[in-house]
Amino acid sequence: MFIYVGSLLMTGSSSADLKGILLKAENGDKGAQYRLAEMYAEAQGVDQDYLKASQWARKAADQGDAKAQYRLASIMYLGVDGQRRQPEALKLFLRSVAGLKVLAKEGDADAQSKLGILYARGIGVQKDLKQAAQLFEKSAKAGYAKAQTDLAGAYLMGRGVIRNPTTAGYWFEKAAKAGYGEAQIQLGLLHIQGIGCRQNVDSGLDWLKKAEVQRHPDYAKRARGLLSRLKSSPPKKGQDISVLEEQAQKGQLKAQLELAQRYEIGAGVKVDLSAVVEWLDAATGQGSANAGHRLGGMLMMGRGIEKNTRRAVRYWNLAARLGHGGAQVDYAVASAKGDGVSKNLTEAYYWMLIARRGTASEKQQKNLKALQGLITSDLKPDQILDGLKRSRKWKNPESPEVRAQIASAEYGDTKAQFAYGLAIKESQPIEALKWLRLAERGKVKDAAEQVGKLVGKLDKEQVERAKRMVERFKPLAP
Image (cartoon, rainbow, N blue to C red; front, side, top):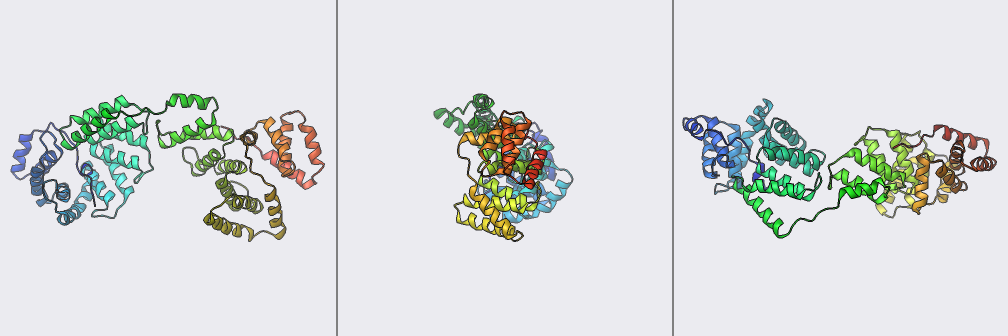
């Protein structure tokens, strides 16, 4: 098991009176002994000396100081004092747990940080990344730079928390401004690469230069190495986000989709789920099935936007009609369960058939077939036959123009509603009548005439059904 040295140490003030601390330590004060061990381990106001750190940590550890036990165990485990003694170190880590728990509960930020590492690594306790992140957060909020750095790392990698590189940058910056070398390095790299923030190479280099002059030799060495590599191979400038935003605002679908992705993962911008929703909605309005499916999922989970199952299912329905296989399955399941939409097994069966038709994977076919079996168990033979007939008429809208037309109809464009109604009047007459009536309500030319023609081909129940659909229709609004 490898434990990174930076994850086992702490930061603190370098202005302490070394002579005063040394005098107390020599007189047996375990707190002062522990403090000296930390100072020598972390090069806080003194040159780094793991041998002295080990000696002072052992004196305090022998007096039962849990934090000193942890410190001594970390030195022994890594062998930074010249000798690796891992079995003994693991026993010492285990001994430190009880004391660290007591101190952490009392609000000791240092103990919370150390206990968090043990939970993160599963040393002396059951591995629990969520518990580790919670301990890091308590310590970080108390202003402890080491914990701020570990919490940032958890957010950067998504360990025990939802991954968010922007939040990671926030905590790295706090620790970096407090002078913590590891945080300065990590923050510099985020700025240089544009991860969770706008790319800013100059700012990134400045943070690396701050780390380069750290008294802590490990941080200084790493920073020098990075600066040397960046000098010989300068970082590439990423895409101009301002240009991308301008393109998206002008309605370029590709730019809208890319911006949604960037805001979700923090690539060249800060993570902003409200911006993800905004650009996915814009892309859906232009006929992007993938955007509609993703937006439906965010609404269903309440991620970045207030949870709204009914609205989520509408986006899934739209994405399903635009040809997205995943949305077809999700809408079928929602229809079967009555989740966000009136329970309708006939509709669920219809979309499950369409989803199966577009799936090549043998495993997916097997799963969809099982779902289909659950749905059909409550259907009558004539309903199954009707679903089979209807599904055979369904065609995937392949052209961007047709997909944009379908989406625009859902967003309330009356001309698009008229055109879409005409396009599906043979394959889906009831649905077509809904769209033509909506176009008629919007006073679209020739809509009334087309409504009259289609009504003449349908029975009374079908006409009434289309009427109810019109009454329930509300345009998807941004």
